[in-house]
Amino acid sequence: MIALACDHTGLQLKEEMKKMLDGMGLEWKDFGTNESVSCDYPVYGYRAAKAVADGECDRGILICGTGIGIGIAASKVKGVRVCTCSDVYSAELSKRHNNSNILTMGARVVGVDLAKMIAFHWLTAEFEGGRHQRRVDMLTAIENGEEL
Ligand code: RB5
Image (cartoon, rainbow, N blue to C red):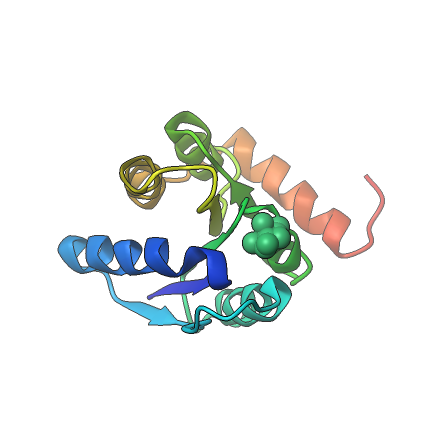
């Protein structure tokens, strides 16, 4: 299950993500917003990130104007590893090396076709484990207030 969320700037791109996920046979859940009126991205970033952290959703794709604000909001939720991407290489490597579980994109930064390519590569990439697992465990340790 993929958590989807956006602010008012990301409505159209979020709909494109739904179509793409449908085409890939992946289920999604929409955490809003679904209105074009100006709204606050932390609300929707938090709701979707919480669903990922709680295990209700496996991963999330979140959209705001730059992808940054909603990414910062999602990052505040324990257990979430956000990648904010506007290129395919970073998106794929963020999964293979960082085991990112939330992808954020900027609707005012990337076009629809590029966003679809980014999301597709992120969704289909696999975490490589090994030395990368050790580093991801360190990220969790930081999150838990441990010293490295
Ligand atoms: C909204 O104007 C914009 O600030 C928001 O979508 C996002 O880009 C924030 O990071």
